[in-house]
Image 1 (cartoon, rainbow, N blue to C red):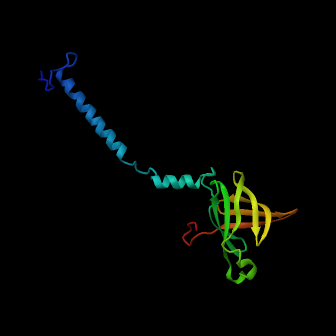
Image 2: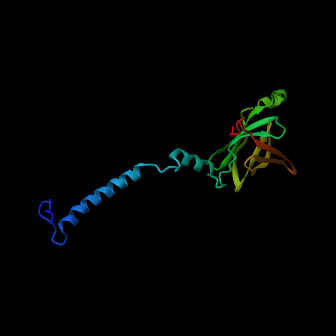
Image 3: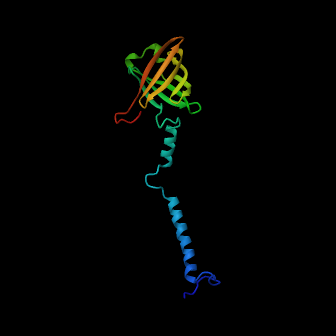
Length: 175
């Protein structure tokens, strides 16, 4: 029989071998737990990636977002679209006009909001005022797919719809 190294002797219900193993098992387990908690599992998202995912899917559309730079179908103008206000409202700023189309009338609206704090009316649609060169229309912005938005403006019963396409860098990433 092994002599019990624990001060005060061995517990009468355990022999010395069992009593010596228990503290070792506990310390091994505590070291293992500490290591497991301090190591990020391979493939797990980092805190930054998690925040980015949450930001991009704040609308609950599976990652489809209106946020980004969009260009009119006729390539005459570009818009920076952001979530603004309470974080679910939509803003669109005119940021570029094709150089050959710039004139005194439209130049004054460069870097101004065409859409400001439009309210979400459906999962992929916002309604609000649309300011086009000083005229305010009642309108909507609707996500058709990841790379296409429809901007519709109405003045009384007359409506016009514009298609906006997502701009991409030469490598295919979003602008």
